Length: 156
Image (cartoon, rainbow, N blue to C red):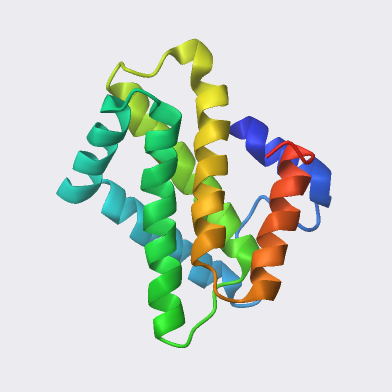
């Protein structure tokens, strides 16, 4: 998962992907979003979703579906309330959330330790595809595509 963060930083430059939460009001929103995501993950429903994900033949796709579903729900809820969450905030939260889901999945013993980075990257890519599908704004959808291309060098 650290590899995804490094690729994102290299692709966009260190100023665009800060290590700390976004400033100017975004920091609190980012923290609340991340807290909400982690609270869900460690809820009974989140734990069950993660267990189901690691039970699938393709663990990465299963984890990507969990992350994508939850992040998509967050976006849908925000859109229904007339709110917008900037793509960079969603992207950063998705990275952190994917990492948390990977850690939980790793504890099950079904995720080969030597494949964690590859599984995390594949899961993150699957989640980004789901997020892009849910995004209604064509400009934001393009931003997600550009960030994905930047992270994966056009190999997503």
